Structure formats: C-alpha cells, structure tokens
Image 1 (cartoon, rainbow, N blue to C red):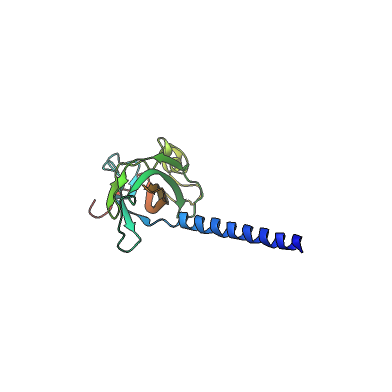
Image 2 (cartoon, rainbow, N blue to C red; image 1 turned 60 degrees about the vertical axis):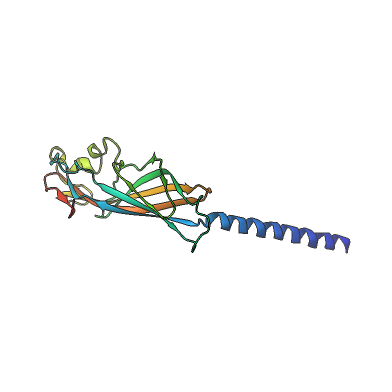
Length: 193
C-alpha cells in the first residue's frame, strides 16, 4: 500500500512538473510583438546585358513592428532589435538550380508599433551571376537555361529577417521578391521605380 501511495505521489509530481514546463514553453513562444515584412521591387526583369539595370538597387524591404496586445500599459521592452537576415531562392519556372543561400548580420532597433526600411541589402553573393543557373544565360554559354529551355530564369528571392524584442522574445518576418533574369531581353523596372 505504501509503495502504491509513493508511486501515485511521484506520478503526480512528474505530471505537475511537465505541465509547468509546457506552459512556460508556450508563454516563451508567444511574442507580444509581430514583425511583418513587405517589399517594393524596383526591378521586375534584370537584364545582364544592361549595365544600368538595377544600378539604383533592386528594391526596399519595409519592416513593421505590430503590438499584438490591446492597449499594453508598458511598451518599453517591446522594441525589436534586428539580428540577421537569410536569403534563399525558389525557382518558379520549373528549374531546380538556384544560388547558394546565405545569412548576414544586421543591426538596428524598430520601436514598438513603428516601421523601418532595409535599403542596400545584399540578396546575391558576389560572383553569383557567373555561376548556375545564371551563367547559362550568357551568349558565350549558349544563352539558354538547360533545365527549362528558356532564355530567362524566373525565381523568388525569399528574405527572412530575424530579431528579438528587448524583453527577449524571438520575432521574424518573411517577404518574397519575384524576379526574372535574362541577357539581352531588356530591363523592366517596376512602376514608380
């Protein structure tokens, strides 16, 4: 009887500890701030043959810090400290070859409920345009993507921005930038760019 009673007590203690831990984890994952990223692309088609295409930058990313709680009394620790961004790629034309993804450190603080712009950020590593899939588009390499048989490569550049509130809650945001690449097809700028 005594062994059974001790086993019941031990089970109750373990169950209470697991419940407390799971609630604590849930609270840590629920940031009171949401980070939202949108982009404004300056270029829709990037022509490698046009040296002025993209010279003004490919675009900007707007980051917005949104407070999820209604009427918070204290927002001092809801500011977002930016830490890094990751760039990945996804072909939208049926091809599979993509540039290597990468991560870059950034810094800055976005006030709670405010916005900030990311300008002049790197979305391709140096030398990326001389490698697959872009190199095949150059005239000396045939000018055609071997995977799709087209004179263009179309993909989305996916930018994930990472940060944390001053209280230590992780936040992130994602935006996708559609872009077509070619050699000699003509640069196409976005309206208003």
